[in-house]
Length: 222
Image (tube, rainbow, N blue to C red):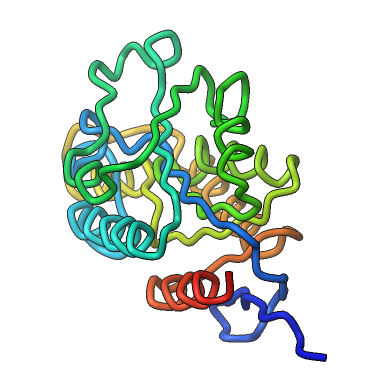
């Protein structure tokens, strides 16, 4: 009997980690990638500029559209983050997935009192690729919500953005963010990464190429 293919959780040390069966149906959940926030002045990206990170996310979206993987953008509603002003999705991302759905949320988690679960049920999705802003806050809350609902979750630092990385840059180079509880934020950032790498039901990729190769395997195995 042939074994079902599996993802490999990639650790920085290069050792194989958890192995999980392929989801039957994937969906991409893009959290809080809004025009008013995702720029080099307000957030950071682990492997370069925010523009570079957005380019990688566009690559993920284009692949998803080509592979028939549905995309859902999740954005905050006015009651949750009125300070953000416009919550329009970054135009370059929206145009990379023109048929994408949109869900609004009123808390950190994209699952709490939203229509996300219903849309995923309608799509028949049992595996979610989750990324966006902020890797240790709204993305993390959404991932925990997904795991609690028994979805397989795939993520990577390479498809996430963080306030912390911008704060750290500003501390090294004088700018608008010269102070703040950076030590606590760094602990939360590392705690989130450790969670993604070790939590049952998670598949985590340190590298973008590894993530895309894993998604290609998943798309080919459905």
